[in-house]
Image (cartoon, rainbow, N blue to C red; front, side, top):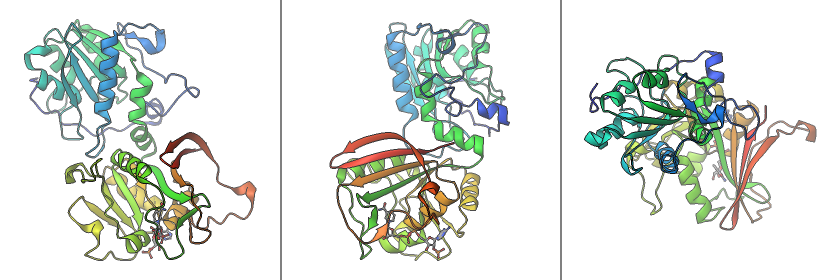
Length: 391
Ligand SMILES: NC(=O)c1ccc[n+]([C@@H]2O[C@H](COP(=O)([O-])OP(=O)(O)OC[C@H]3O[C@@H](n4cnc5c(N)ncnc54)[C@H](OP(=O)(O)O)[C@@H]3O)[C@@H](O)[C@H]2O)c1
């Protein structure tokens, strides 16, 4: 296959056993290395504890992970993947990343940039190259045809139709090393892996609150509870999701744009914006900001969180950023459909106004919904808490 051919990604389905081995889903214990599939002839840092990858290769893997994290495009049926091409001296000559179904795989993107410099090079990639003969042929063949000498990758490809890349490369005489920065690479695709396992998007509920748990003042105003650092963190994190979801109440009260803006406050191009989704039975005013052409918008005329997630999954959505308000958040939390909570807490009091979450029907302390605290970070004068569902 020629490096300039576009590899069209195939939809991926997993059975329970395969899904349980997806990167980022199963970890043996907190902090332990994820399970890894070994291939004959492939050196594997993860399982053998050897440290073969050079400093330059490890630095390139860090860069490849950064590339994989780039915002934009739907995740669809494919994970995020980044790739860097290194000369034998360890100099980076090309980079690539996957932009979603229907676009080139990261290796093909990088090989295109590298051209003839791929011959004799080392390719560092966050996911095992695919060995799938679809409409255009496998990445393994493109790497061999380009004369690549060595391939270093982070996580095994557990998609049964695409797996076997490491073995195929080894058989073709390419030096292969697996498991380099495997946990870091898997973290990039954690929400995607969850979505493929559970066949629904991963849900992150974000809210801003005063220290006394108010999400808006008595007159309904909520701009701004937190400071600029917290608000720009919201934009960074929004960009990593493929859907921003709010209830009709928030659209009516705040008329938000729900777009991702960069550090200068300019919106990202429409093609890179997450989908905007508004949930509820009330129609949205045709002049509402959420219906402008800055990004795509879908109206989910339901109050059933499971149904909404089903519809979003069918639209190839894998990570929902639930921005409230309190009513919608309560419905998702009560249904057990909040997987992660990111709370921005301001050192301020309101004493009255809207609670950060509406009534959950909990009457006694033993029935409180409990989450595991994963991270606490100060952002300017505010604090960001990251919590995960337990069990
Ligand atoms: N501090 C923050 O982080 C934050 C974030 C967002 C909003 N807010 C504030 O929150 C306020 C709006 O609050 P809100 O609770 O009205 O907003 P909301 O949760 O966005 O919208 C509530 C509406 O969603 C619809 N809905 C969809 N699914 C539902 C379900 N399962 N159960 C009940 N209703 C469902 C209902 O409208 P239908 O009748 O159309 O079905 C309901 O009235 C504003 O003042 C805004 O500023 C604060």
